[in-house]
Image 1: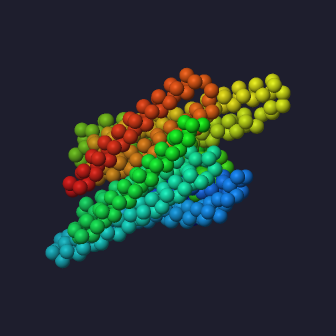
Image 2: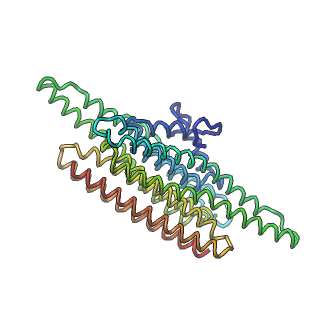
Image 3: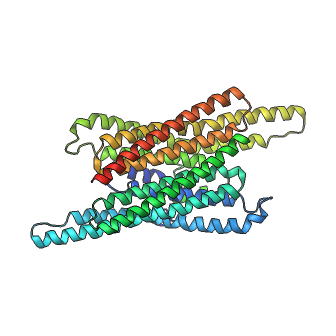
Length: 215
Length: 215
Protein backbone atom coordinates (compact mmCIF):
# COMPACT_ATOMS: atom_id res chain seq x y z
CA UNK A 1 0.00 0.00 0.00
CA UNK A 2 2.75 2.45 0.80
CA UNK A 3 4.89 1.72 -2.21
CA UNK A 4 5.54 4.36 -4.79
CA UNK A 5 3.25 4.33 -7.80
CA UNK A 6 1.31 1.48 -6.32
CA UNK A 7 -2.24 1.36 -7.64
CA UNK A 8 -3.61 0.64 -4.20
CA UNK A 9 -1.94 3.63 -2.60
CA UNK A 10 -4.49 5.37 -0.40
CA UNK A 11 -4.64 8.81 1.18
CA UNK A 12 -3.78 9.32 4.84
CA UNK A 13 -7.45 9.97 5.68
CA UNK A 14 -8.61 6.88 3.80
CA UNK A 15 -6.11 4.75 5.67
CA UNK A 16 -7.09 6.25 9.04
CA UNK A 17 -10.78 5.72 8.25
CA UNK A 18 -10.09 2.11 7.28
CA UNK A 19 -8.31 1.53 10.60
CA UNK A 20 -11.10 3.21 12.58
CA UNK A 21 -13.83 1.08 10.96
CA UNK A 22 -15.26 -1.92 12.85
CA UNK A 23 -13.44 -4.51 10.74
CA UNK A 24 -10.51 -6.61 11.92
CA UNK A 25 -8.21 -5.27 9.18
CA UNK A 26 -6.32 -3.02 8.77
CA UNK A 27 -5.50 -3.07 12.47
CA UNK A 28 -2.55 -3.00 14.82
CA UNK A 29 -0.41 -5.20 12.54
CA UNK A 30 -0.68 -2.88 9.55
CA UNK A 31 -0.33 0.25 11.70
CA UNK A 32 2.89 -1.18 13.17
CA UNK A 33 4.32 -1.73 9.68
CA UNK A 34 3.32 1.82 8.72
CA UNK A 35 5.08 3.18 11.84
CA UNK A 36 8.21 1.38 10.59
CA UNK A 37 7.93 3.07 7.18
CA UNK A 38 7.67 6.48 8.87
CA UNK A 39 10.81 5.76 10.89
CA UNK A 40 12.67 4.69 7.74
CA UNK A 41 11.56 7.87 5.94
CA UNK A 42 12.95 9.94 8.82
CA UNK A 43 16.33 8.21 8.42
CA UNK A 44 16.26 9.11 4.73
CA UNK A 45 15.42 12.72 5.69
CA UNK A 46 18.45 12.96 7.98
CA UNK A 47 20.64 11.48 5.23
CA UNK A 48 19.32 13.97 2.69
CA UNK A 49 19.90 16.87 5.10
CA UNK A 50 23.51 15.72 5.59
CA UNK A 51 24.79 14.61 2.17
CA UNK A 52 26.19 17.53 0.18
CA UNK A 53 26.30 19.82 3.23
CA UNK A 54 29.54 21.52 4.26
CA UNK A 55 31.35 19.80 7.09
CA UNK A 56 29.96 16.33 6.36
CA UNK A 57 32.12 15.45 3.34
CA UNK A 58 33.79 12.62 5.29
CA UNK A 59 30.48 10.88 6.06
CA UNK A 60 29.10 11.15 2.53
CA UNK A 61 29.68 7.54 1.41
CA UNK A 62 28.44 6.01 4.66
CA UNK A 63 25.40 8.30 4.70
CA UNK A 64 24.44 7.41 1.14
CA UNK A 65 24.64 3.71 1.95
CA UNK A 66 22.46 4.29 4.99
CA UNK A 67 19.89 6.16 2.93
CA UNK A 68 19.68 3.31 0.44
CA UNK A 69 19.20 0.76 3.21
CA UNK A 70 16.50 2.91 4.85
CA UNK A 71 14.71 3.26 1.52
CA UNK A 72 14.63 -0.48 0.92
CA UNK A 73 13.32 -1.11 4.47
CA UNK A 74 10.67 1.53 3.85
CA UNK A 75 9.52 -0.28 0.71
CA UNK A 76 9.54 -3.70 2.35
CA UNK A 77 7.60 -2.46 5.40
CA UNK A 78 5.20 -0.67 3.06
CA UNK A 79 4.43 -3.98 1.36
CA UNK A 80 3.91 -5.57 4.78
CA UNK A 81 0.95 -3.26 5.47
CA UNK A 82 -1.07 -5.18 2.88
CA UNK A 83 0.52 -8.57 3.61
CA UNK A 84 -0.64 -8.34 7.20
CA UNK A 85 -4.21 -7.75 6.05
CA UNK A 86 -4.12 -10.75 3.67
CA UNK A 87 -2.57 -13.08 6.23
CA UNK A 88 -5.13 -12.17 8.87
CA UNK A 89 -7.98 -12.68 6.44
CA UNK A 90 -6.58 -16.16 5.81
CA UNK A 91 -7.01 -16.95 9.50
CA UNK A 92 -10.59 -15.72 9.52
CA UNK A 93 -11.36 -17.77 6.41
CA UNK A 94 -9.95 -20.91 8.03
CA UNK A 95 -12.15 -20.42 11.10
CA UNK A 96 -15.19 -20.29 8.80
CA UNK A 97 -14.50 -23.75 7.28
CA UNK A 98 -17.28 -26.35 7.82
CA UNK A 99 -17.02 -28.58 10.87
CA UNK A 100 -19.93 -30.99 10.41
CA UNK A 101 -18.05 -34.29 10.05
CA UNK A 102 -14.96 -35.55 11.88
CA UNK A 103 -13.04 -35.24 8.59
CA UNK A 104 -14.12 -31.60 8.23
CA UNK A 105 -13.17 -30.87 11.82
CA UNK A 106 -9.72 -32.30 11.25
CA UNK A 107 -9.19 -30.33 8.02
CA UNK A 108 -10.46 -27.12 9.63
CA UNK A 109 -8.12 -27.50 12.57
CA UNK A 110 -5.13 -28.09 10.29
CA UNK A 111 -6.01 -25.11 8.09
CA UNK A 112 -6.36 -22.84 11.13
CA UNK A 113 -2.93 -23.89 12.37
CA UNK A 114 -1.38 -23.29 8.94
CA UNK A 115 -3.06 -19.89 8.63
CA UNK A 116 -1.95 -18.83 12.12
CA UNK A 117 1.64 -19.72 11.28
CA UNK A 118 1.45 -17.72 8.05
CA UNK A 119 -0.15 -14.78 9.87
CA UNK A 120 2.81 -14.57 12.25
CA UNK A 121 5.19 -13.84 9.35
CA UNK A 122 4.25 -10.22 8.49
CA UNK A 123 4.41 -8.91 12.10
CA UNK A 124 7.63 -10.86 12.70
CA UNK A 125 9.08 -9.20 9.61
CA UNK A 126 7.88 -5.82 10.90
CA UNK A 127 9.57 -6.40 14.26
CA UNK A 128 12.89 -7.60 12.80
CA UNK A 129 13.04 -4.91 10.10
CA UNK A 130 12.07 -2.14 12.50
CA UNK A 131 15.02 -3.09 14.69
CA UNK A 132 17.25 -2.59 11.65
CA UNK A 133 15.62 0.81 11.04
CA UNK A 134 16.11 1.66 14.72
CA UNK A 135 19.83 1.00 14.39
CA UNK A 136 19.95 3.29 11.37
CA UNK A 137 18.22 5.96 13.49
CA UNK A 138 21.02 5.60 16.03
CA UNK A 139 23.67 6.10 13.35
CA UNK A 140 21.71 9.02 11.88
CA UNK A 141 21.53 10.70 15.31
CA UNK A 142 25.24 10.20 15.88
CA UNK A 143 26.73 10.99 12.49
CA UNK A 144 24.07 12.97 10.65
CA UNK A 145 23.50 16.73 10.56
CA UNK A 146 22.96 17.80 14.21
CA UNK A 147 20.11 20.07 13.05
CA UNK A 148 18.08 16.99 12.30
CA UNK A 149 18.89 14.89 15.34
CA UNK A 150 15.35 15.32 16.68
CA UNK A 151 14.07 13.78 13.47
CA UNK A 152 16.36 10.79 14.04
CA UNK A 153 15.07 10.53 17.61
CA UNK A 154 11.43 10.63 16.50
CA UNK A 155 12.37 7.92 14.00
CA UNK A 156 13.70 5.86 16.90
CA UNK A 157 10.44 6.28 18.83
CA UNK A 158 8.39 5.21 15.80
CA UNK A 159 10.70 2.27 15.01
CA UNK A 160 10.47 1.05 18.59
CA UNK A 161 6.66 1.31 18.50
CA UNK A 162 6.68 -0.61 15.20
CA UNK A 163 8.96 -3.29 16.64
CA UNK A 164 6.89 -3.80 19.79
CA UNK A 165 3.63 -3.61 17.87
CA UNK A 166 4.94 -6.34 15.58
CA UNK A 167 5.91 -8.44 18.60
CA UNK A 168 2.40 -8.14 20.09
CA UNK A 169 0.84 -9.20 16.80
CA UNK A 170 3.05 -12.29 16.58
CA UNK A 171 2.15 -13.14 20.20
CA UNK A 172 -1.57 -13.04 19.35
CA UNK A 173 -1.04 -15.69 16.69
CA UNK A 174 1.22 -17.78 18.92
CA UNK A 175 -1.42 -17.88 21.62
CA UNK A 176 -3.55 -20.18 19.42
CA UNK A 177 -0.67 -22.16 17.87
CA UNK A 178 -0.21 -25.71 19.09
CA UNK A 179 3.39 -26.51 18.07
CA UNK A 180 5.08 -26.08 21.43
CA UNK A 181 8.65 -25.97 20.12
CA UNK A 182 7.92 -23.38 17.45
CA UNK A 183 6.08 -21.25 19.98
CA UNK A 184 8.88 -21.47 22.52
CA UNK A 185 11.58 -20.56 19.99
CA UNK A 186 9.54 -17.71 18.59
CA UNK A 187 8.86 -16.28 22.05
CA UNK A 188 12.60 -16.23 22.75
CA UNK A 189 13.32 -14.47 19.46
CA UNK A 190 10.63 -11.87 20.18
CA UNK A 191 12.08 -11.21 23.63
CA UNK A 192 15.53 -10.71 22.14
CA UNK A 193 14.24 -8.30 19.48
CA UNK A 194 12.26 -6.31 22.02
CA UNK A 195 15.08 -6.05 24.57
CA UNK A 196 17.54 -4.89 21.92
CA UNK A 197 15.01 -2.38 20.58
CA UNK A 198 14.34 -0.82 23.98
CA UNK A 199 18.05 -0.61 24.76
CA UNK A 200 18.83 1.10 21.44
CA UNK A 201 15.90 3.51 21.72
CA UNK A 202 16.88 4.53 25.28
CA UNK A 203 20.44 5.19 24.18
CA UNK A 204 19.35 7.48 21.33
CA UNK A 205 16.87 9.43 23.47
CA UNK A 206 19.39 9.98 26.27
CA UNK A 207 22.01 11.24 23.81
CA UNK A 208 19.67 13.57 21.96
CA UNK A 209 18.12 14.97 25.15
CA UNK A 210 21.54 15.70 26.62
CA UNK A 211 22.51 17.59 23.50
CA UNK A 212 19.26 19.60 23.59
CA UNK A 213 19.94 20.65 27.17
CA UNK A 214 23.54 21.56 26.39
CA UNK A 215 22.62 23.85 23.51
CA UNK B 1 -3.61 17.05 5.93
CA UNK B 2 -5.19 14.02 7.50
CA UNK B 3 -8.67 15.44 7.76
CA UNK B 4 -11.54 13.96 5.85
CA UNK B 5 -12.35 15.59 2.55
CA UNK B 6 -9.45 17.96 2.98
CA UNK B 7 -8.19 19.21 -0.35
CA UNK B 8 -4.59 18.78 0.70
CA UNK B 9 -5.03 15.15 1.70
CA UNK B 10 -2.06 13.20 0.34
CA UNK B 11 -1.42 9.51 -0.22
CA UNK B 12 0.68 7.49 2.21
CA UNK B 13 3.54 7.28 -0.32
CA UNK B 14 3.43 10.99 -1.04
CA UNK B 15 3.63 11.75 2.66
CA UNK B 16 6.50 9.30 3.19
CA UNK B 17 8.35 10.75 0.19
CA UNK B 18 7.86 14.28 1.55
CA UNK B 19 9.31 13.21 4.91
CA UNK B 20 12.26 11.44 3.25
CA UNK B 21 13.18 14.51 1.15
CA UNK B 22 16.05 16.77 2.24
CA UNK B 23 13.79 19.58 3.43
CA UNK B 24 13.19 20.49 7.08
CA UNK B 25 9.43 19.90 6.81
CA UNK B 26 7.49 17.65 7.13
CA UNK B 27 9.78 16.16 9.77
CA UNK B 28 9.63 14.67 13.24
CA UNK B 29 6.98 17.11 14.45
CA UNK B 30 4.48 16.20 11.74
CA UNK B 31 5.29 12.49 11.98
CA UNK B 32 4.61 12.63 15.73
CA UNK B 33 1.19 14.19 15.12
CA UNK B 34 0.46 11.52 12.50
CA UNK B 35 1.42 8.79 14.99
CA UNK B 36 -1.17 10.31 17.35
CA UNK B 37 -3.87 10.13 14.64
CA UNK B 38 -3.06 6.44 14.08
CA UNK B 39 -3.42 5.75 17.81
CA UNK B 40 -6.77 7.57 17.89
CA UNK B 41 -7.99 5.58 14.86
CA UNK B 42 -7.09 2.34 16.69
CA UNK B 43 -9.23 3.43 19.66
CA UNK B 44 -12.12 4.04 17.26
CA UNK B 45 -11.51 0.57 15.79
CA UNK B 46 -11.78 -1.08 19.21
CA UNK B 47 -14.96 0.89 19.92
CA UNK B 48 -16.49 -0.16 16.59
CA UNK B 49 -15.58 -3.81 17.24
CA UNK B 50 -17.28 -3.60 20.66
CA UNK B 51 -20.46 -1.55 20.18
CA UNK B 52 -23.38 -3.72 19.04
CA UNK B 53 -21.56 -6.97 19.91
CA UNK B 54 -23.15 -9.51 22.25
CA UNK B 55 -21.86 -9.31 25.80
CA UNK B 56 -20.91 -5.65 25.67
CA UNK B 57 -24.39 -4.11 25.98
CA UNK B 58 -23.45 -2.59 29.35
CA UNK B 59 -20.47 -0.71 27.95
CA UNK B 60 -22.30 0.65 24.90
CA UNK B 61 -22.84 4.24 26.09
CA UNK B 62 -19.33 4.63 27.52
CA UNK B 63 -17.79 3.10 24.39
CA UNK B 64 -19.68 5.43 22.08
CA UNK B 65 -18.53 8.45 24.08
CA UNK B 66 -14.98 7.15 23.87
CA UNK B 67 -15.22 6.72 20.11
CA UNK B 68 -16.43 10.30 19.70
CA UNK B 69 -13.58 11.64 21.80
CA UNK B 70 -11.03 9.58 19.86
CA UNK B 71 -12.46 10.84 16.57
CA UNK B 72 -12.17 14.48 17.62
CA UNK B 73 -8.57 13.94 18.80
CA UNK B 74 -7.83 12.28 15.47
CA UNK B 75 -9.11 15.32 13.58
CA UNK B 76 -7.26 17.80 15.80
CA UNK B 77 -3.99 15.87 15.52
CA UNK B 78 -4.53 15.56 11.77
CA UNK B 79 -4.71 19.36 11.52
CA UNK B 80 -1.53 19.60 13.61
CA UNK B 81 0.46 17.78 10.88
CA UNK B 82 0.14 20.88 8.68
CA UNK B 83 0.30 23.38 11.56
CA UNK B 84 3.70 22.02 12.56
CA UNK B 85 4.99 22.59 9.02
CA UNK B 86 3.70 26.19 8.94
CA UNK B 87 5.06 27.05 12.38
CA UNK B 88 8.50 25.70 11.55
CA UNK B 89 8.58 27.59 8.29
CA UNK B 90 7.83 30.75 10.31
CA UNK B 91 11.01 30.13 12.30
CA UNK B 92 13.10 29.67 9.15
CA UNK B 93 11.61 32.86 7.66
CA UNK B 94 12.50 34.84 10.79
CA UNK B 95 16.11 33.63 10.62
CA UNK B 96 16.29 34.95 7.05
CA UNK B 97 15.31 38.52 8.03
CA UNK B 98 17.95 41.21 7.25
CA UNK B 99 20.49 42.05 9.93
CA UNK B 100 22.39 44.97 8.44
CA UNK B 101 21.49 47.75 10.87
CA UNK B 102 21.13 47.63 14.66
CA UNK B 103 17.38 48.18 14.23
CA UNK B 104 17.16 45.22 11.82
CA UNK B 105 19.15 43.05 14.19
CA UNK B 106 16.76 43.88 17.03
CA UNK B 107 13.66 43.21 14.91
CA UNK B 108 15.10 39.96 13.63
CA UNK B 109 15.90 38.76 17.14
CA UNK B 110 12.38 39.59 18.35
CA UNK B 111 10.78 37.89 15.36
CA UNK B 112 12.88 34.75 15.90
CA UNK B 113 11.82 34.59 19.55
CA UNK B 114 8.15 35.04 18.62
CA UNK B 115 8.38 32.38 15.90
CA UNK B 116 10.11 29.91 18.22
CA UNK B 117 7.35 30.36 20.80
CA UNK B 118 4.69 29.80 18.15
CA UNK B 119 6.56 26.77 16.82
CA UNK B 120 6.41 25.13 20.25
CA UNK B 121 2.60 25.12 20.19
CA UNK B 122 1.90 22.34 17.63
CA UNK B 123 4.26 19.77 19.22
CA UNK B 124 3.02 20.71 22.72
CA UNK B 125 -0.53 20.11 21.49
CA UNK B 126 0.58 16.78 19.99
CA UNK B 127 2.13 15.73 23.31
CA UNK B 128 -0.85 16.75 25.46
CA UNK B 129 -3.47 15.31 23.10
CA UNK B 130 -1.55 12.05 22.61
CA UNK B 131 -1.61 11.55 26.39
CA UNK B 132 -5.41 11.83 26.21
CA UNK B 133 -5.44 9.29 23.37
CA UNK B 134 -3.15 7.03 25.41
CA UNK B 135 -5.65 7.06 28.26
CA UNK B 136 -8.41 6.11 25.84
CA UNK B 137 -6.21 3.21 24.68
CA UNK B 138 -6.02 2.05 28.29
CA UNK B 139 -9.80 2.13 28.64
CA UNK B 140 -10.19 0.41 25.27
CA UNK B 141 -7.81 -2.38 26.35
CA UNK B 142 -9.66 -2.83 29.64
CA UNK B 143 -13.29 -2.54 28.60
CA UNK B 144 -13.33 -3.14 24.86
CA UNK B 145 -13.75 -6.40 22.95
CA UNK B 146 -10.85 -8.64 24.12
CA UNK B 147 -10.34 -9.75 20.51
CA UNK B 148 -9.04 -6.29 19.74
CA UNK B 149 -6.90 -5.69 22.79
CA UNK B 150 -3.70 -5.95 20.71
CA UNK B 151 -5.02 -3.10 18.58
CA UNK B 152 -5.50 -1.02 21.74
CA UNK B 153 -1.96 -1.91 22.83
CA UNK B 154 -0.48 -0.91 19.45
CA UNK B 155 -2.48 2.32 19.83
CA UNK B 156 -0.77 2.85 23.19
CA UNK B 157 2.68 2.33 21.63
CA UNK B 158 1.92 4.84 18.87
CA UNK B 159 0.38 7.37 21.27
CA UNK B 160 3.44 7.16 23.50
CA UNK B 161 5.76 7.66 20.50
CA UNK B 162 3.61 10.65 19.45
CA UNK B 163 3.74 12.11 22.96
CA UNK B 164 7.51 11.76 23.32
CA UNK B 165 8.11 12.92 19.73
CA UNK B 166 6.05 16.03 20.53
CA UNK B 167 8.10 16.60 23.70
CA UNK B 168 11.39 16.42 21.77
CA UNK B 169 10.11 18.91 19.21
CA UNK B 170 9.10 21.37 21.92
CA UNK B 171 12.55 20.95 23.52
CA UNK B 172 14.26 21.88 20.24
CA UNK B 173 12.40 25.19 20.20
CA UNK B 174 13.01 25.82 23.89
CA UNK B 175 16.75 25.40 23.43
CA UNK B 176 16.85 28.71 21.50
CA UNK B 177 14.21 30.56 23.56
CA UNK B 178 15.46 33.23 25.92
CA UNK B 179 12.56 33.66 28.37
CA UNK B 180 13.94 31.68 31.28
CA UNK B 181 10.67 31.42 33.22
CA UNK B 182 8.65 30.22 30.23
CA UNK B 183 11.33 27.66 29.41
CA UNK B 184 11.50 26.37 32.99
CA UNK B 185 7.72 26.02 33.30
CA UNK B 186 7.46 24.33 29.93
CA UNK B 187 10.23 21.85 30.75
CA UNK B 188 8.37 20.85 33.91
CA UNK B 189 5.12 20.37 31.99
CA UNK B 190 6.92 18.24 29.38
CA UNK B 191 8.46 16.06 32.09
CA UNK B 192 5.06 15.52 33.67
CA UNK B 193 3.43 14.60 30.34
CA UNK B 194 6.24 12.20 29.48
CA UNK B 195 6.32 10.49 32.88
CA UNK B 196 2.55 9.98 32.85
CA UNK B 197 2.69 8.68 29.29
CA UNK B 198 5.39 6.11 30.02
CA UNK B 199 3.57 4.91 33.15
CA UNK B 200 0.27 4.49 31.30
CA UNK B 201 1.91 2.74 28.34
CA UNK B 202 3.76 0.30 30.60
CA UNK B 203 0.55 -0.56 32.43
CA UNK B 204 -1.31 -1.34 29.21
CA UNK B 205 1.52 -3.46 27.76
CA UNK B 206 1.92 -5.49 30.97
CA UNK B 207 -1.81 -6.19 31.11
CA UNK B 208 -2.17 -7.17 27.47
CA UNK B 209 0.96 -9.36 27.51
CA UNK B 210 -0.24 -11.20 30.60
CA UNK B 211 -3.54 -11.92 28.93
CA UNK B 212 -1.79 -13.17 25.77
CA UNK B 213 0.27 -15.62 27.83
CA UNK B 214 -2.77 -16.79 29.76
CA UNK B 215 -4.79 -17.62 26.67
